[in-house]
Structures are given as C-alpha cells and as structure tokens.
Length: 414
Image (cartoon, rainbow, N blue to C red; front, side, top):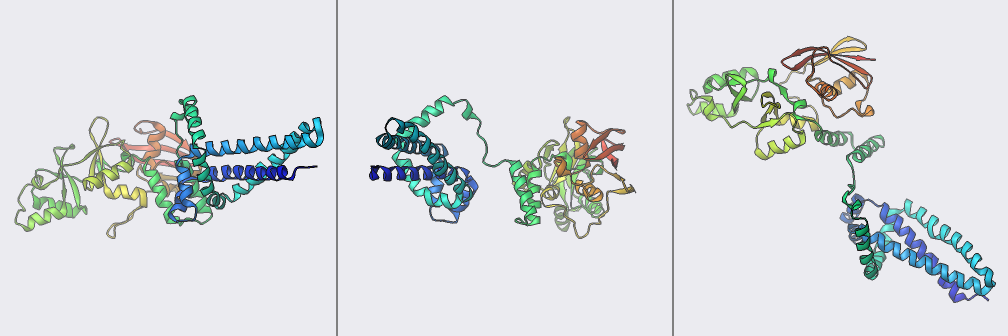
C-alpha cells in the first residue's frame, strides 16, 4: 500500500520545483528599469525584489541550487516509493513518471505562467526567495567564486542593461502604439542623434560667418552688428583664420552708454572658445553650458577656422528648428522636376524626407542632420565638384563647391 506521508512529501517537492522554476523565469525576465520603477512606486515586495536584482549572479545561483535539490529529492523519493510498490520494475516506472511530472508541472506550466505574469509573480515570491538566498549563502558563495575563477576571461565583457538600438526600438513601438507623445519621441531621438552628430555637420561654414574687424571701435561695431541682425560676432585680425575674440551687442551698447563708444572693441571682447570639427554635439552642448558661452569657433585638422557654431545650433539638433520671430524662413530646396531637386550642403535631412515622402531611418542612414553629413560620411573626404553617391534610393551629385563648402547638390529619386 502507498505510503501517504511519502506521497504528500513528493507532491510538496513537485510544488516547490514549480515555484523554483517560475521564480527563475519571472525574476530573470524582469528588467532592471522595471524593477527600479516598481521600487519607486513602493509596491509591496519591491524592496526585496530590488535587493535581489542588485546581485543577479547570487540570485540565479541560489535558485539553481534550490531547484536541483528539490528535483533530486523528488526523484529519489519517487524511486523509493515505486520500488516498494513494483519491485525491480519500479526504477523504470519512477524515472518515466517523474520525468513527465517535473517537465509538465515543474517546468512548462510554472514557466509559462511566470513569463506572462512576471511582475506579479516576482513581487509575491521575492521576499521568500530573499530568505532562501540568506539560508543557502554558505553554499552559493563558494560556488560563485569557483564560477568566477573558471569564467574569469569571459566576465570582462559586461553587456549593458539597455542599448541605444533597443531604446530606438522602444521609441518606434511607443510611436506605433501611441504610448509616448510624438514630441517626446522627437526630443529623445534628438538626444540620441546628438551623440553621433559632429560640429562640422551643424556649424555655420566659414564663408557665411559674420565677423567684425578687431581694429574697429565700439560705435562702428554696433552699427555693423545691427545691420547684420546678429547679436554676437567673432573678432578677427586680417583674416578669418585669426579669431581673437567674441563680442556681444548688449555688452557694446552698455559700453556706449557709459561714453566708451570710441574704445576699441577688442578691449571688451571675451576670449574665443575653439573646438574640433570632429567634436560630438552632445559633448559640445555640455561644454558650452559649463563655460557659460554661446558661441565657439570650429577648427579643421590643420587648426584653420572651418566655421562657427552657437548654443542655439546645438539645442536645435535636439528640439528641432527654433525660428526667431524676426527671422525670414527661406526654403533651401529648389524643385527641378518631380524626381529632382537642387539643395545646399546645409539642407536638412527632414526637408528631403518631406519632399520625396521617404524615411532615411528605414534604411539605417539617419545619423546625419544635413546633406553635408551624408556626403562626408560616404565620401570620407571633402566633397568635390562631380562627386556622386547613391543611398536610400536617391542619387546625390555635387554640382558646385566654393571654399570647400558645398553650395549646390542635385538630388534625384532613382
């Protein structure tokens, strides 16, 4: 006759096996960001969950030890019961029955449930698991050290919790399902893009720089600047390659009001900030903010002046175009026919996308802010007249170059 005490213990062991398997799936599948969110919301059980996820290696080692102890105990007990009931045939019967029982009730069902309900299950089970972790620590710590020793080379490369590509995928899904506001998505995309965009791609090119002669006095400089419509300007000596200062219109007006209109403008200027054309926009934004300056001079690899950029230019890369109320908005695209347009190096990618009703993101070519960025990326050199590139179903032909600046580019849909 079956020993009901042994049978009851066997059922309990199978249930513990199911809980162990479900815990492993639920706790491992719950990402770090979700755990932090639950902890900040002060959900019941989130404290234990947060502490467990801080030591993932210890958590998984504990669960594996527990699961194996339970499964081995269940198999041994089942074999003992079967041999008592069926004699020498009991071993085979126990092996078959326990294999199916553990597989269905100890693995498939609990893991399927915890996959769908990982958050709910994790919050319920985290406190008991935390207690088990403490109880099994004498066993888990030596095993972890042995594991670290055997896998010491493979442990060097740590995979980040969330990659940039995964963030972009989250944004795409959020946009499709209307979970995240469109303007919020654009801001985040702008921040991500700022980590790949260089100063050269957003700067005002050298030939379009408005500059003042450092030999001018304050009165002359004010007149020139008011006529230009700018509020800040670099000061140069002899050529644009020799920038010696940066001056602000407001500062000059203050000096003029003090009766210092005939003072040399260089005397009231600030020291210019110089940056490399290869500097990343995100880094530049932080640098200008920390130094409390609004303008920087961009240098090429030979330390010649390539252009200038402003804090506004950098912010626009993240939040989009900022149109001043006094600005006139001129299109940078000239239509030739339905399939062809003429653009400049500064034409924004968004303008091209709108005209041709296409999306550079789908082709993976969206790490550029303007035509210059595309040309430099594909040509790996300064564009020259006659250069052509083909990407995303468009043919780009460089038609005119002036002082290494792309003035005219034909773009044709092919």
